[in-house]
Amino acid sequence: MRVAVFASGSGSNFEAIAKSDELRNLGLEIELLVCDQPQAHVLKRAEKYHIPVFVNRLADYPDRNDYEQAIVDKLKTLKIEYVLLAGYMKVVTKTLLGAYPNRIINIHPSLLPKFSGLEAIERAFAAGDEVTGVTIHYIDEGVDTGPVIKQCKVVRLRNDTEANLEARIHQTEHQMYRQVILDLLNKNNEVAK
Ligand code: GRF
Picture: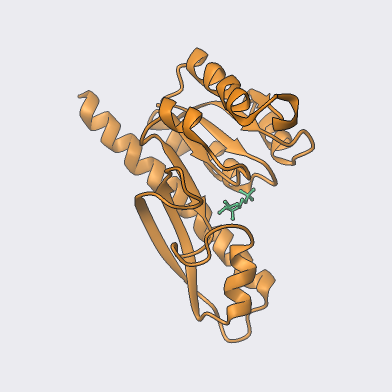
């Protein structure tokens, strides 16, 4: 299964996927990292795993359609089958969605539909929610909307700081993303039999 991962920042989710021997052995091939931020730390992580990168800035195109079309062209050249968003900070629009219908997966650090959008962990913490979590879903044209694949709860402990809670949410994310990809690989391998 040939995938591209899209990320804009640190890339801890990207690395959790890239370093998994289990996923690789089941047929996951990360052919490309797409990144819209030339200084992002995720680029260093890609280098570590020898994964090719496509650094593509919206500011270098006349509009978003041309920006996304350049990505689609690159993905099609590499015969990418699935797109995994992992902290990609751009809204995906119809150019990309149309090229990969039901094949773009996103991870979000809240129990959607609660706290969609930016700073989900901070807002859940500030709201004093005793339970928050992580959602993995197929995307549609909305912000953090689309069919849910998996949700897991993360409980806020009595003495949690925001940093502690955030660390546990990230741990949960890494396990969940690997599990969702594993399930997808197993399903695809079944169909191919
Ligand atoms: C994660 O919390 C993910 O849910 C959100 O962006 C963050 C990316 O973190 N969409 P990282 O760059 O993978 O460390």
